[in-house]
Amino acid sequence: MRAILIIAAAGVAAGSAAGDQFDWTWNRGDPGSYSLNDSAGRYESIVASFDTTAQTLSWSLTFSNQITDGLTLALDNGPNPKGHAGELALLYLDASDRSNLELLAYGYNGKNSRNSFRDGDGNTSGDQTPDVIHDAGDTSWINSLSVTDTIDGKRIFDFSIDTTVINNHTPMYPDATDPWFGVGWGEKLGLWLHTYKNLNSDYNGDDELTRWDRSAEGWFDGTNFDTEMVPLPGSAAMALVGLAGVGCSRRRR
Image (cartoon, rainbow, N blue to C red; front, side, top):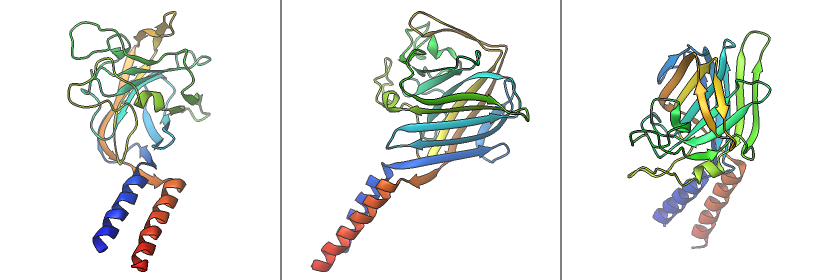
């Protein structure tokens, strides 16, 4: 009977994990396995969360100066996203025109470059058709998006997105071994974040990127950051109900 109780409790715990939120906070100087380059904005802090049930990802990045005009971002559950072609999404946040912010998502070609908008397959020579997930005309997945300059000389990139379409995407160029992941993280977080100064961008009639040039580029690349799991109210309640039910069954015997 004790074995049954343990198995049931483990099952409830597994179900709960599927409905958790994972928070991550980073401040400059924190330990970890990562590299920084401030050429396109001095990184100061990041506050982020990923709700695995609502599929909501929130990201707030603060720079200590006001020179960043855009960024590209790939996220996963621990490894450095670089090199993982056909598995992840690459977000493009274009703030070159502050009156008209743009946020797009493409399949990440895995290269250490910004050209996924032009070349969808990093494993084939030449430029292959890009894998567009959300173009600039599609704002249905964007809950909020802002770029704010503060009076003390900082710049904050802040957005919240619905990742459902991204994470259910069928990649145009799937990896032969590893399945599509999309965007998000769990108990570990890996990121490939590049920033751009004096960004120049263009779009075609389909609201897809055709140009992403800059005068300077910075980055924040890191692996296996620890996140904080925050059980959501629904999953926590289900876990208690499940364990209570197991206990009652045992007493009746």
